[in-house]
Length: 271
Ligand code: ADP
Ligand code: MG
Image 1 (cartoon, protein in one colour):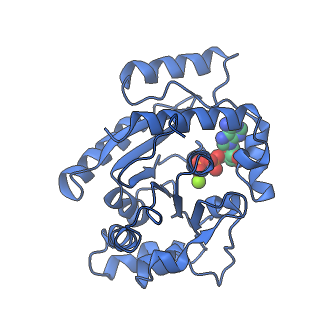
Image 2 (cartoon, protein in one colour):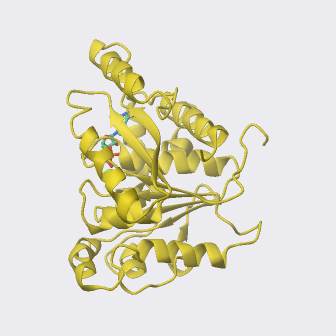
Image 3 (cartoon, helix red, strand yellow):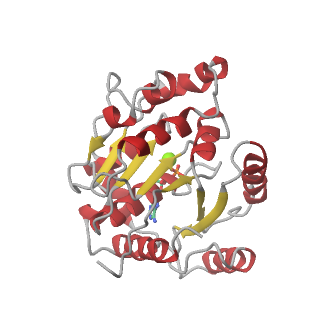
């Protein structure tokens, strides 16, 4: 599909915002699904012990399931941990289980503690380097805190994607987040940059949503996608069916919006 160009190299995104409930997980899984639906090979790595991305992808993540904990602590290859999503054959997920919460502390004493995910992804890319097996996109879904899990995501990624909820205090904490990205890129990962901002839970009927959107677009003209994601009940229902909204209700406003946002990301390419 020429409208949806495939990148030549794997684009690794970390979906981050230290606030909870702003749409990180929803954004990670739905952009991933929208890109995979167009034929891209996409991997989502669930790095939040809550496992919400695993739920939405419909992959197994009971307590005894091996997932990102094993990737970080035991250096188990991601190829052995990823599961194919039931609805979209080119979409894969590495699940998170509750033991990942302990990894935050266990990592402290490990060697190269900030680089564990980066090393895991490097090994995956080396093992999947043919045209038929390479991943076009990897999305890392982060917990809402700046601990070692999130730092691992920042060190592993090239692009930071920040979802911003169009509500009160949306911009509070944003400059701190951007400071963190800059610190990380100075000290641990010079390739890292804020590439994409996506406005989520947008409600065009309220002045507040419009004001937040306008302010974000003024400050981040290049980074902010033209398409914003509307508030939609279908988006919030989909995870309880173990689905992304892309397969749960393909024609809903939320699915259409995530597809258009994914198209923008694909067409802009890695800058
Ligand atoms: P985070 O990962 O940042 O904590 P989530 O993606 O889990 O945020 O979203 C928080 C809650 O808001 C979830 O219940 C989710 O289903 C819901 N939600 C996310 N995006 C939308 C949207 N566009 N419209 C309606 N509900 C949404
Ligand atoms: Mg989340």
